[in-house]
Image (cartoon, rainbow, N blue to C red):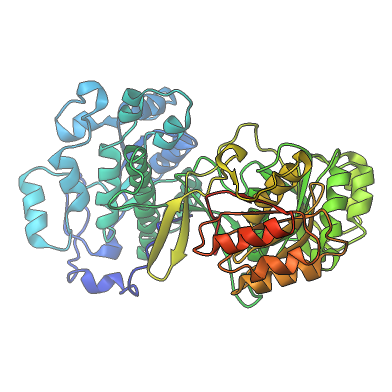
Length: 550
């Protein structure tokens, strides 16, 4: 199923737009005759496909129903090799396939046969005068543009040659004239179409044709979107954008149990949240599971050493690094055990038996890791509802270059929020951070980027010890982070996603003994905060960039 991302007005019954029917028999000479919308018998079909999956069987089924097959190029050759009688497109139009196949179906005789309103006497008369033959069904799928673009190192000239022109035009023509014609664009529909034709004397119901037309226009919209995206690849914010989305999963429910939900992937993206992810056990994923999972994965991707991220309500409630996955998990969990209850846990190292036994001691909604031992799966299997996700993502996978956010009636689009390196930072305090403090500051700053604003992260020894998230007041965010901390803050560090407008917020953490602060800087009153940290011999780093996450 494809979703173009555009919701139109309420659908008006197609019959309102169909002229009064004229009833007439189908002539044996194959010429176009007057007929009512629901009286059209499929007698001629045009088959022209790039993906030849099931095409021979579909054509054979049509021939058994007495349907004449017209075909082009490689499709005609495949059908002929299978022993089927095929009429070439040249025989239908009287015009040869030329220019290496670039021009083969673009001919008035074909499109008149597809587009004629057969209940209109003028259309019928014009068709008969020009010897136009009706085409009742087309089976067309397009050159593999998306697959071509996805290949590494593909030449622009090859991409251009995989832009189909005649195929989309045929599909759209048949879909527009849905009262009299049927477009079939997916091999998955072949069996259903044949079954209905056999059961109804060669007819497809108007409801079926409308469904096929909806699929057809979504299919060409997706195709055009991919092409447009390729041409816009070097334009950061184009004047107009198109999007197409393919349903990946039906979800158990939305943000709340009374809301239905599904997950669609953006077909322009190289990968998506669940690509290369295999669910090994547990319940069906929910909308909230995927939101939290997305946040956790994005933060996890910041680290190459063994790391664990625990997310609850779309905020990290614990992040830890360690020598092993087990140590990383223990550090992350220690930050806020209460909030971790029912959270999403992501690790960038495989799960063995020891780690699995530690994990099952708490309630987890989703567990994500790159591999599980047999012992681990046996232990985790005791939690029958635990959604176990196995990460099969290849090394070097690249994330999205832009970020989208849906708002009423539109999208907000921005560059991805990339993390600056230590070399871009400056020390604003009199005292320089020690090496250990620098390591802790960079870690806290990395986590802080993924916490909803206003965001405060307290950290020590590559583990979070207190997180204040999503507060309207930065003072409140600091207070929550301090209150969450379960240990002495002496020697710990603090990160703030934006500058401190007044020294009152850092004062709360400084009173508890933190030794270093990292923040963007840029407040009109930075001098007051600098004066405060200098008076306490506390180091403070300015990053020069804030990382709001609304």
